[in-house]
Image 1: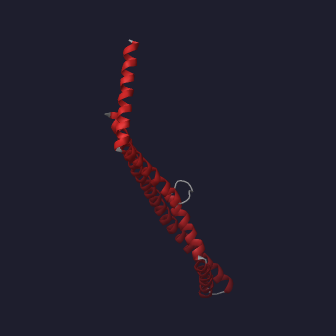
Image 2: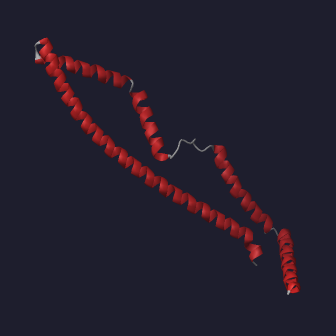
Image 3: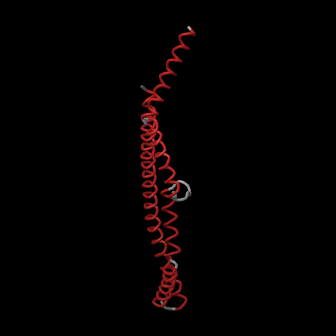
Length: 169
């Protein structure tokens, strides 16, 4: 009877293994992505905090230095503020290039171990066709005419194996 259920057993086993592999792969990717995202978030917060302190101290030093040069700390603060406004406008003008590309790269690195292309529709259709072909094989195997033929072949092979093993003794 094992020969008669072999195609269905194979389809069921292959499908179960495929689903289990996909679930495990998704779990690992999710865990890796969360770990990378958490690490990136903590690192970004630390860098922003440290960068803010450094920028503040640099601005204070700039105000004091420029204030001494021009003779007025208020004018020095205005000049440093103007420099920051110019820097802000440059960053704002380039925001799509600077921020979008860096975020895209960061998210792609989080989600994929290596750079790989997005799955194509043709690749997905190919996987679906493989399963459809397995289902067609099962249908063909259990087609009434093929089923009788396959059953007879299975019985003859079993009998031949029994005769061979009996004659070898």
